[in-house]
Length: 226
Image (cartoon, rainbow, N blue to C red; front, side):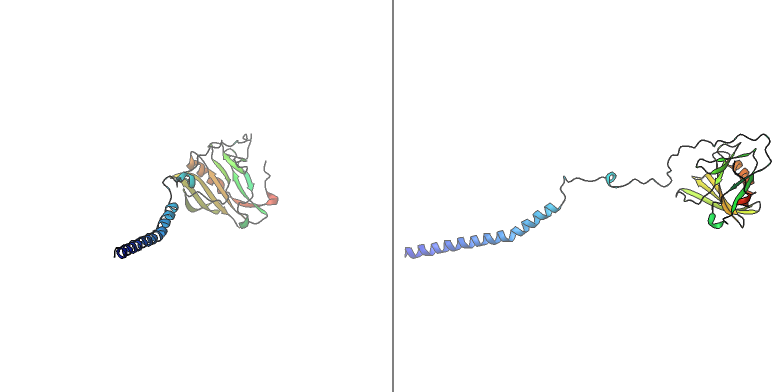
């Protein structure tokens, strides 16, 4: 009888141990993938000690609207010595700046008082006339060009002499910077730019006296540049 009880007890203990082992295996197989997924998530997440990048290392600084680079002022133009007995007016003949709107065998011509203006070369190597009494007051050829976004331009139409001019006044922070005059006859169309630092009103007033003489001239009749 005792042998039968011992055998039954041994059978129950073995069965319980086998069930416990089976349950532990199921727990391991069930929890292992979850632990592996958690480990993958940790590796995919940035570490606290991962390096970070500042805006300075990844972006380019753009100047704010209204900011303009500091420019070194150009020296005044060197003007030739006045003639001893100058004529009342002298001619300045040149190539029209809008060749597509001009005939190929014509030049522009303006006349100026040699006691007020002098034919010279501007800071960019182009023929120009500089005012003898107003420093930095210069009339030079004007070519079409883009303008910075912080430049405001006012447009006007006005007749000077026999020519109707398109007049464009450029402002920076409310201060006049330069004025362009565009006009021509049936043979040429050209532009002039008037620059100044001081006495802008007087400079423009005397420049318009020159523009009122604008006409065209054939290349064969052009006045040689001295």
